[in-house]
Image (cartoon, rainbow, N blue to C red):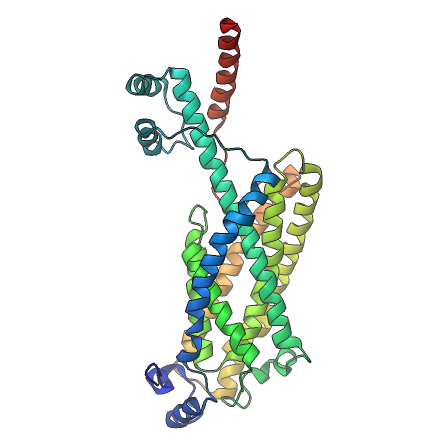
Length: 380
């Protein structure tokens, strides 16, 4: 095979249970996984990007516009104004009156028309961000649901896999752990998913760095666990991590919808309910099951069964880093829970930047509308 990379090329990662030449022979015979089997993940990552782009246009945007009652202006772009507003980060700052006067002279528009243009521009930018966030939540909810179903079928059908009930089975009789076609596909599509997410990570959020770090750690763990056939504990960790995110992403969609008066009475209580489901499931899966059974299995059980090896620290450090991120995110969850108790509802995702026009911009819009009415009366 031209692209075949033998396990001996990364022997430091592999436990010293068998001679590395035996592992190489197993890889050639197809009874030990190699990097070649994960190449489809790159194709999946590309397909995810294509499918997401298509769905954003045909499904996500129309649903977002309907649920959040968004409108967009049909005004033509004016470069002279756009350059100034962009330099001032127009969504966050009101353009001073002297700037409006200067722009009016440059464009030949009245100051009122300049202010209206800027307000419409900022509102459109805010609405576009809302559509992107709504679409991202819909997209993530779709593949987290799909991956949980796939993981459940892989590990729990037709019967529960023995390592789910006895974590020592993650490493007993290693490396003679056959990988089913379904388990192989589960690994490939999950790796493709995280490569895709790494590329599409939303940067306008307070925990963007932590999210990118999480994706990098997860990709490193998926690759490492597959290459040394730690797929039993690997699939368990993947399923454990995907479950809580279903409630999070669906809850985001309802939270965005609840900002619309027409749907607030229905969407707001659903948002709160889903947030409770997410908080409880996150606590159980990420702060109980993961550290008590999965992290414990790798950090404590594996060296007892396989002996200590150099690659042990690779997995121990990465898995412990994940746990640190879990604690950090649960802290954010507690902040949101506090907000619910004080305010009575989930106002916004504490990890995201505010996507609303500043109050002074809204006031400017109201003044503009009053001026429009006065001008119309004069014309009459």
